[in-house]
Image (cartoon, rainbow, N blue to C red; front, side, top):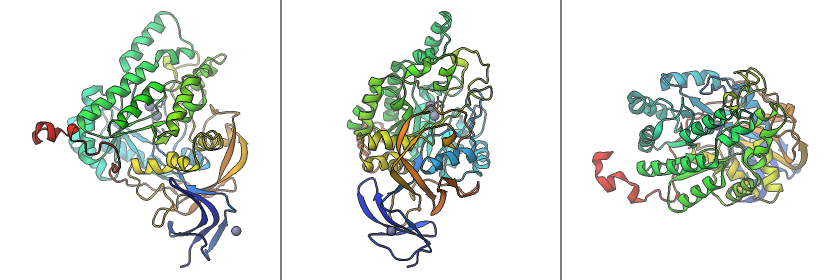
Length: 484
Ligand code: URP
Ligand code: ZN
Ligand code: ZN
Ligand code: ZN
């Protein structure tokens, strides 16, 4: 067989094993993996470097308006370029419904926005207005075109659905095999804290962290899981930031809940002390849930290493440190008026590799699982996330020895800062392919905007999930089929 490309002499790393070998690519797919493959119209000599499934970024806000109307700094061109330089072959940003919008319009809008992507993409659909028509017609239609995950918010006045709304979404998701993602923070606790802070005149960025206590996340995570159990639907808890929240996830998984979760580099690398930087610098570190403390970092790393989290995702939510972003409501405003979110799509995998693998906290196989393979499984991306014949040739070749200092300019995004500035990291993705085409190589972008394609996803793969067949949670089992 003649291959379009042969990646020769790589250290191939999958979620389950490491071995030396060659990867043969034809028509954008992996055609063969073997100790030695001949030929290849193009041969890439990996020289023992790591050949891994390209990263799949499962949490990013790209060309998305926040609920308060701030457009993210990155569009699909800059966001996908930044993702590719950070070792990602594909990503799944959000398509956000704001109240009053139809899901069909939302998807059409994001299809137009995503046309400039350099890597493959899909969307998680944020639902903020679950009308009858949305629930019965529009969501099933979105699902039918391969958008098999929904996201809901328990916080933010303009997004949160209340428990009943969540149950409605979970029920639709269950019927179709979709995964519901949730941003879990107790909205009333946060609002109550905000009022108390305002009364005392506590407005500096550091009070953002105080206003969103760990309890607010822990309570909401627990509640979200109980709601999902009532609906017998799979649930994905995004950006877990607390030791208590992670412990709840771990316990419920062991007890059989159909549960997935992620944390993010910022909760492993930074603390709320960063919010206390001079002047308004702290605004750069405002994200929700907020940064915590070093004890939490330790605990979250433990949960990364022991399987509580399927993925480590960036939650790339880029708002520039100026009047177009963080300070859209003014430069000297109280913390609740500063845009929430920080960039990190390019830093996610270099950080996870360096602090995780090089730092001895996780194995190389775990790195692959946490960065790619698990996201593919969880979100029904059937042709990506593994190095095996028949899969898309979404491959990242890493040099595990190269050291680099993180700088804003090196993120290749449309941001004017990175919260990881100055960090010294070891391990660099040198070649990043989407469907066999090098997107990034020799430090340069190799494709035009539009190289990426929409990926229609399959229903959630619950095989091997604890509790996938627990009868007690099945409404039909308990109450009869009239509840379906
Ligand atoms: O602060 C964050 N994470 N902003 C992005 C929106 C969200 O909450 O996911
Ligand atoms: Zn060679
Ligand atoms: Zn969120
Ligand atoms: Zn987010």
